[in-house]
Image (tube, rainbow, N blue to C red; front, side):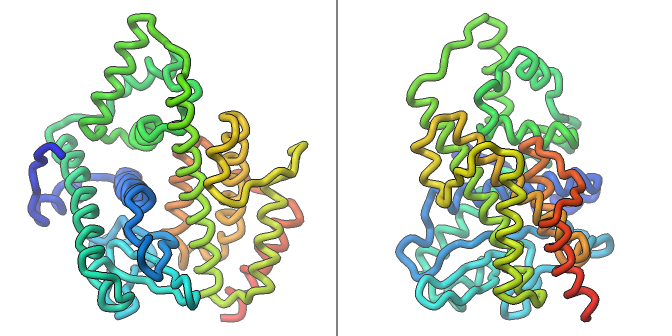
Length: 339
């Protein structure tokens, strides 16, 4: 990794105070997405009893006097910026932890905990470099991104990390991380030269892997919603009913009822079929956003994360009066009314 200037906490907080609400949320989603990618690719917990279920990032952690919504806590009671949710493979027990308590509460080896901490520190350095660019007056390279989109530079490549980060930061005018901006400029130069080669087999496999990774992250966000609904008081029968309605909602108006159950299966599909499966999973996530509206205050951070995911994939959340949405929302409303 190239050398990146490290900021003090005071310096970082000062720049964050200059950002608006949408920019804070986008930067938080960038952090969460990058951390999730690290958990998926580096397999931190593969030799332990614990599975990584998902994580929640509090975008307002450093704004003590302007905090929006819920705080996040470790199971020990400590307030957190990044909350990691783990599930025991042997017992099914779930833990909500900060990174410093992985060893204490989950008996995860110190070497693994330190490796995870190094990865998180790396992500924070990436974020700091973006903040420094913003402070120096740099913003999102809109002309480059527009040119790439208008000349089909991202056609069949919508699942690449570059496109998704461009989508995320273009909406809030934040500068790209330097390697992302370099890749975007290289793409534009390639388009300007008239060189648009067809996808190779290797590139197709890379895109399938990206789609599978997106599918897995969406599935984790849905799992997080299920867990939080359980914590709010819904029983297994109600959660099963909601899950059935969510799948039926996601498959509405589709000729085929084919549905993959594991992210690994996407690597065996064609690009078209893999994209279809991701679209179905995104619609399923939109279902959970719709039905958790009565718990908007309690689940504010999770709902914000879900909306950011949908926004990155250009998937709008539209109101629905379908039976499944109405029934599931009623189950959620019942929890609120009984408090």
